[in-house]
Image (cartoon, helix red, strand yellow):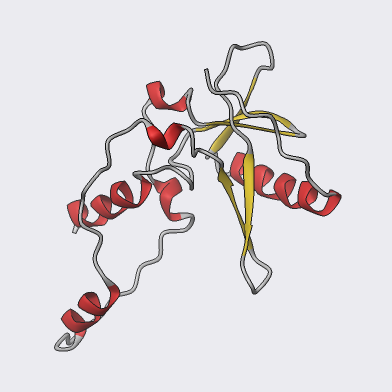
Length: 145
């Protein structure tokens, strides 16, 4: 069983984690679970960019050791831009919280749990930090379009 206790956090980091968790709860990307369940849990990690924006990820490093790597091809930006060179019409679409647009199988959700100062939460959508999330996400538009 994977049980990683929450990392020590500053008050500022706790506030930022709480903001992200509340946003994810509002969008139904996360749900709170009971404390008495026997659960596999990990801790959230806050990734902050230079511009001050942040993203909540799970520290799924231990979990990422188990699945086979999904070798689905991820396009390289220069190749994608080359294809646009002769385009007449271009459409840009942005998936808000991209990975979270992919649902999780119920059997996987029990592995995608995080613990923090606010309690234990389970992702209902693909979280950031999962090994095969980029390949899984890329497959979605390739299949649709």
